[in-house]
Image 1 (cartoon, rainbow, N blue to C red):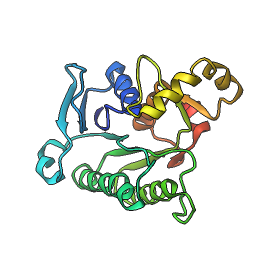
Image 2: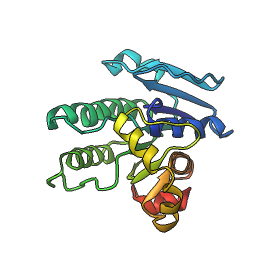
Image 3: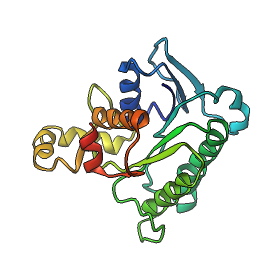
Length: 218
């Protein structure tokens, strides 16, 4: 499998990248992001996130899957700004990939509580729902929306958001207990990465995967 990964420097992206590098069935990974990754591997290639995807179209053909985990926290952002980064950027990439790779499987990470109606009171949930709905209408071979809840970072992976790092540090001693008590609400970067790889390879019966689906796959 040849895959494209958007957002590999983020917490979720680091988890997906790790699993891709470990998986012998993944032949090559093209990382597209704002930051250069420290990892070096023969099957890992990197390009900077462009302002216009038409400028890199020749490098985007011949791929089987795309893991799109690029995103930002909505804290302190207006809906217009959050939409520009979360929805508009995602769709610009996805529309280009759908045109260039008709046999591609597209996997997108949103979050638990995403609002498919696009009409709820929570801004981030509406925008994520709008993004999911638009992605599911594109002519990919298949598209899957992942909605994880609390994600525990493993293997030295850290969030780039300072507040999240503080929360993870404080909650770390309790996380193993909470995972046993609430297994359908907590996952790890490793589990999420493995679940996404499983779906990229073998598909899944439904397009939207909630936490119980992610847990069972991992």
